[in-house]
Image (cartoon, rainbow, N blue to C red):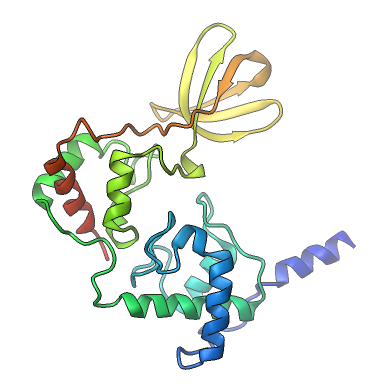
Length: 251
């Protein structure tokens, strides 16, 4: 019985088509897609596709592929290692959500939505980024997200908030943890995994550390991000420069 239920669950979002069977001219499908989107997607992506905490959908750029087939799989299966979880929906429902996402893309085209360069010098911003941000925000680091294409998936306002108020929204993938062993060693890093008996973290030197809970004197999950605020350490002009650099990324 359990196997049968598992197979049914796996088959709920089974994809039988390569392209969306619905078009933007189908107002009924579009309306249903909007309703589904407002239930499953709005919290992270916003109804406009640009104001949520998740990837910006008001853009034609898709990090994990932009074809109908690829976006379908992103919606249905999610993206491992991120807050984007899969949705146990019928195939028809996924296609209708994708249809609404395509309308968001279309509405954003040419309207200036997305990460606008705005004020600031991108060349100066690149220098500041390299000296201040590069160690944690590159493909070579696991302490922070790679920002190489962040301008295509986040708004300028979101990026500014992340620089000056990094504690406001913290992704589960970058949740901080502090432990202190019975011998007095203090270790801080990103939580990787935990269970009743062990806890695993990535320390600030990017070393994976594993601890038996029985050998720990304290475990603390701070509300603060490992990333410090740069509201005071960078001038307003430098922050604008960094934003101009980030917003000039891949689109």
